[in-house]
Image (cartoon, rainbow, N blue to C red; front, side):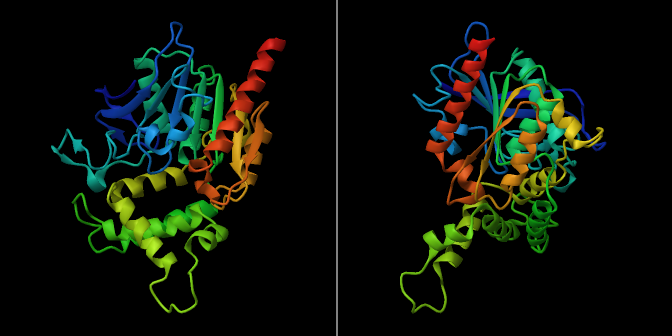
Length: 347
């Protein structure tokens, strides 16, 4: 059975960059049942605009006969701190003012997010996690959490992600925030502030999520007569409106900043030393056509996480392949779990 619940943390929560929250809540979704020794937990970290309901955006990975069959595993996902799907974020009420945070919501990092997740984990009495899985922004959180609590996670599967966000990725995110800031309503304290700018931002982002060949295959014209109103143009407008119907510019701004600040080596001797702290068996998955998180970034992870292995997915869809190529991902995870069983047999 799938359930949605809210975790409340009532104490002051100190943030990495010096800010603080007077408390927070996390909405989380669970599917399946904990076994007696609580050894069957699969924790999911969602991507930038995802929600805690992983059956909505990643349902192909959690069905009967899938490698993480909910009949065998207890699967959990929490909406990220700073999100807009039930967790504390910019549209939440600040208990100190009685008004929504809006622009006053403090800067947060992936480390803040995984610390909030870890408080939820402890609240639920989960001492070990069988597998920690996440793609893109969620993959960044997987790495940070596995470094923060190396003895908790038995396996991690970071997908289409990196150890630190690249100048390329930061530039793309800044271009999107510039689009939001160009919206005349962005400075307002209103839930719909910056929404037109966010539509443009999403259109910019879509170009990095897909590839030249994706657009060529799906958005090419049927004839040569057109001079305007092209399919590719209407598709971009559609994607902007689609996000505007379910998201807000404050959260989009905050989470892209969070992605930009990602660097597992911050405050440590080096990125390599930070990755070397991971004790979990690691299966890194990359996508061969990914423009936003190119395969070289997953190769780097596999090179520096002890014992890690890399598997590459072939996809026409670029970065978004991690949300599309269910059959390949299921097979990849099956291969990983079989490898783990063989290891345990040899021990």
